[in-house]
Length: 410
Image (cartoon, rainbow, N blue to C red; front, top):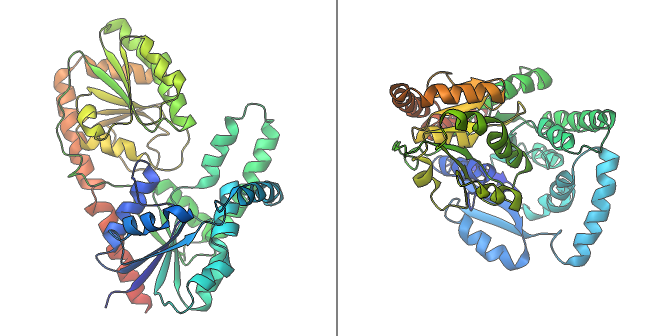
């Protein structure tokens, strides 16, 4: 019989428009081969059946509870008020309150799982860490998929609030950091998606803790090599534009990188590929050289026509799964050093890193001026993805390592 694994998650593995959903989807797909999977989540009451149906394709059992937060207008308002006090008292975020105190508090988890046995439980994010005590009492191994170091992304969110004093931002960041790093110690095993974050967590938790390194890979059969650069040259920014961070990165490409490119290649086009572009991003199309696609069912078909792609991300945390997707198609990538920090890329093999937008523009021009170099970089980009970030090299590898680790413990 397969070991029984519970997945406790507020993130669904669908519709896979976001990197979080992609990671949960591929993790389930890899684990199901080796484990009997139960997915434990919540949903609005009128969506519970639909969520169960969608989950049934990826796991053996789906345990879907009615959301306590979205029950009605009263509960939304009530939890908004309580959550606001919780945030200021604890230093955590509202999402920590919703997941850890409203949707998955220890008493509710215990009641829902009464009589059910598991060998291990995998938590998506640390927000429900208080429930680990329930599993520990029953000798159930607890595993945390960190996704990324959240206090670093929290600091980035605070930095966008220009009205907050720097001293207050520092204080709020330190409070959240302490809560997050203390929560890591509640888990038996941790999964890092970035080599730098793996090293950092080891220092904080201790080298005796059991760690896994599982980068954000992808099914490269869905992102098959097929680089077909259009004429005139197309330069892309690719990412979900519902994110303020990505919006700013797309604007940076347009305002600081493309003007330098247009000086030498006036016909070159700038393509912003991603869902949910706000009005100010759509307005870039007033420039006839700019194309903003919005949601695309198969972004592969557009991205494979790009000459190269840009990723000027700032902040050394997390994992840029969009970089992996683009390079799998064979599209060369020019990124900031922050964007690929800790991801383990071999620089110069389909991807180049720069310290400033000016350097990114220079690197873009260098490649545009050398067609043979572009072709070689396209080949190297795909090769690096096959070796390091394929589904087999990431999610399948993790599933086998987890199965072996749990067997050793038993």
